[in-house]
Image 1: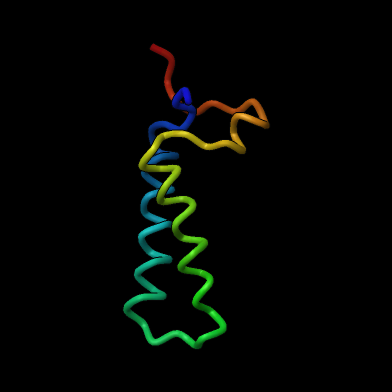
Image 2: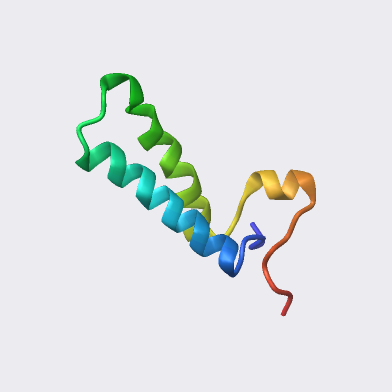
Amino acid sequence: MKANVGGIDKILRIVVGLVLLFLVYFLKTPDSLWWWGLIGIIPLGTGLMGYCMLYTLLGINTCPTR
């Protein structure tokens, strides 16, 4: 897997993922909204790994070339 997520994109993904997980875990959300926490795992994981499979399929690369 070649890194294709970089810079501000990576930071935004991590922040959004943590915010979604925080909202579901710490706030008393209704049972119907628990899946937002699961959705928060996706941007958090892609931000931490620096790789997004959807970016690969679409041919997008925000990681600076070296």
